[in-house]
Image: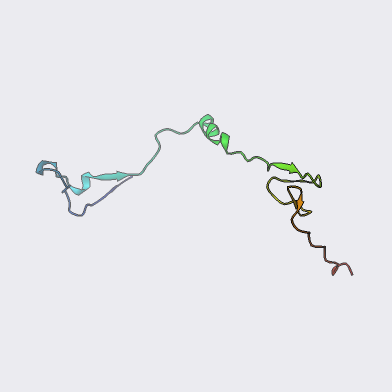
Length: 95
């Protein structure tokens, strides 16, 4: 499927001599279409590096709790030191 593209001044291209003039319909742009279909092997080789890895975990030195690396534990510890005290659960719904 080709679509003719008209220039500002039909048939004139800058820097060309008179015998290089073209009509507007001789300059045709076409869509980019692949020449050959990608095989399953090539597709899968391209996707080989797309897999997600599980997050890296560490054990806290003070509490022994398992946590994500460079993140605060649920108890409020980071690198063996207490950073904050976690809030107590609300007992409003218990009654």
